[in-house]
Length: 486
Image 1: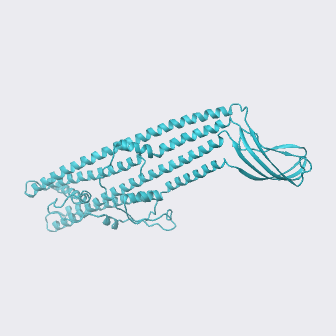
Image 2: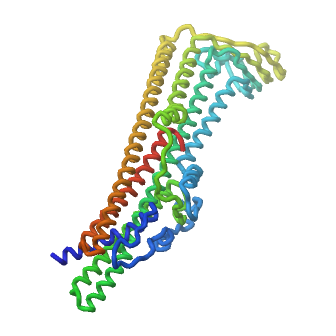
Image 3: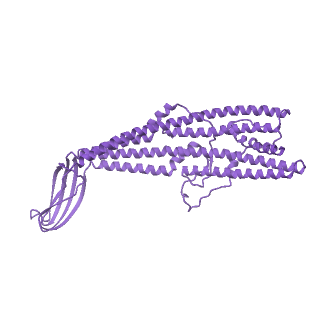
């Protein structure tokens, strides 16, 4: 029974000597003198973590992703966000799609202007007849050219200018512009999503680094404890089995450090991927896990979301696109009028019989309107009206989802903030209990196990506080995302 109590005391001492040193840096508590008779040593620093890291990724020139930029040194959260926005590959693809949509909108606008072409026609015919050329509209008569008996070669320059289209060109342009705005909204959405991913991976790396410091301090304590036990075995105060048990615990502690390094390096790897930088980059974290108060209330973030969330802008642009396509459908009830010009040279047979080798031309206006199409235009217009109503409902749904996301993010943040305050109260109580019990232990009124137990509870309270701050920073980042900000 006494051996079990002593082993438990040794194990709990890790919690005091190890992780409290990390929390001492994070929250400024004075942890000196918590354990009587224990060896003091400086807590594990970030530099020690980096220098002792057994995993150093190196990417050879021929390896995948070797051409990505490399970042070295300490990186703050804001710097990480900016680097992610600059380099993230998914975001860059979204940006290219947006740029391409702008050119398509310009293409739709160009259809308002004139167009010209050079045409050749060689024909051999046994009869005088008429050739119909296809047109780019289904509601106007196609242009025609006479084909005369015999062989002829025509070289012609032709030009056309739309005069009246009933809204067909205008609707097409408005639809293209709406699609451009949707692509911009998709790019903005990818942008704030990238910022959120970078923040989440950054804080996760900071959290795993803190736990790695705890594990490293535990090894330091176990090394001291094992050496101390070895001396006691040599003095004949304890059996050799106790020393072997301490050595086994030291080996377990080192395994824990390896596991912690795995988690830390995985977190750094995820951060590098989010930043789209060379995986061999030697990164360090400049910002520590600290509580930062959030300004404003839920109404503030709801108003920000109404202005900034790209989903809302995209849904509104979708409504505009469907209305533009409805205008195109309505234009098919209107006449289509175009001005045409033609200059040609005919060799061989000609309509009047004496135009061989002569230059000529004409300018004319041609229009047409569809009289009957078996209900094609009517049903197309009905479908366009349905698409408009669907887009308007989708816009309402987008507004509702955004409001839900902001509200849920605020709920999560508020609970995380309350948990931080409760964890601080728990730390205050645990520190006072430890102080009293430690004082009693020094005057012989309390046993060592009680002193260890009180110190462990204080460590657990501070570890709970550190984890609460981590969750709070994540909730803070998600609220910023929900409001449409970086």
